[in-house]
Image (cartoon, rainbow, N blue to C red; front, side, top):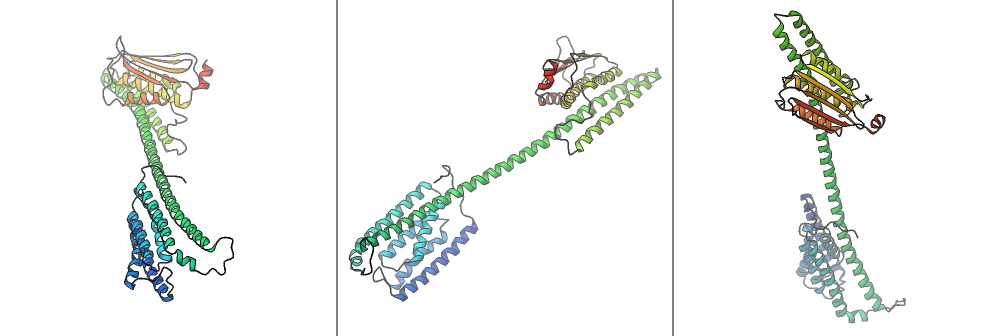
Length: 425
C-alpha cells in the first residue's frame, strides 16, 4: 500500500464534520439501546446470565457514544470503545451488531485521522492484539459450553468444535484487517488530496506571478518605447528651438529653417507614436513584437541628419555587407542608436558625433561616440537602462562610458540569428 510523505499531518476536522460525528454518535447509541431491548426481549443471552439493566445500559452507551467525537479525539475514542466492548462481553452484556460496528469505526477513524502516526499504529496494533487475546480467553472459558452444544446436523470433514473456532477467528481476522487497512488508506488518500490542493495552489500562484511578470514586462516595454520615441524627438526640437531663438533677429532664414526642422521632427514623432500605439492596441501582437512599419537600422541615416540639423558634425559609417535582419533586432539596434544620439544632443554638449554600424560574421555592432564632456547622462538614467534591456533581450552586450581621449561612447553587440550569420559568413 502506498504511503504518504513522512511528517505530514492531516488538518483537524471541520466544524461541519464534528457536527456530523455528533449526530452519528447519538444515532448509533440510540439504535444500540434499541438493539439491547430486542435482545433482552428474546431472552437469548449467549454469553451467560446478564448483569443488571443499569449496567447493561452503561456498557452499551460506553461502547457507542464516544463515536460522537471520533474525529476530534480518534486515539481516545478507539481506546474507550475497545475497553467498553471487552468489558461488556466479560460482563455477559448482549452486545451485538452496533457495538461491533462502533469498534470497527473507532479503529478505522484512528487510522484515518490519527495525528501522531506512530502512536496511532501502536494503539491499533495493541487494540487488535487485546481483542484476539480476549477471544482466546473467552474461547477457553466457554470450551465446555461449546463442546456441549449439539452438532447433530454437522456434515463437513472438519470437527464441529474446531470449525466453530476457526470460523470465529477468521471473522475477527477479516474484521480487524479491514478496519486497519481502510483507515490507513483513507489517511493516505487525504494526504494525496492535500498534495493536489497544494499543487493546484502553487500552480495558481505561479500563473498569477507569470501574469504579473507579463504585465510588468509590457509596462517596461511601453515605457521604453515611449522614452525612445518622445525623448529623442523632443530633445532635437529643444535644441532646434534654442538655435531658432538665438538667430531669430539677426538671421531670419536660419530661424525659418530651424522652425521647419522642428515641424518635421514633431510630425515624425507623432507618426511614430501613432504606429506604436496602434501596435499596442493590436490583439494579434504579442509582448515584445515590433510593428511592421517601425523604424529600423536602415533609418539610422535620418537620425544622423537630424543631429546635423542641431549643429553637430555628425558622420555615419557602415562597415560590412548589410544583411536583412529580423525586425526585432533591427528595431533594437535603431533604438539604441537613437538613444545614444539623443544623449549626445541633449546632455553631452558635443560638437561632433560619429555613428558606426558594423556587420560582423556573427554579430551586429552599433557604435556611437561624441566629443562631449564624457560624463554619464544626468537624470534617472532610463535611456541607458533601456539600451541595456534591449541588448540583453537579444542576448547581446552594451558598453557605455567615457572615452580615454574625451567624450562618451556607446557600443552594443547583438548576436545574429544562425541563418543570418550563415549568410554573412
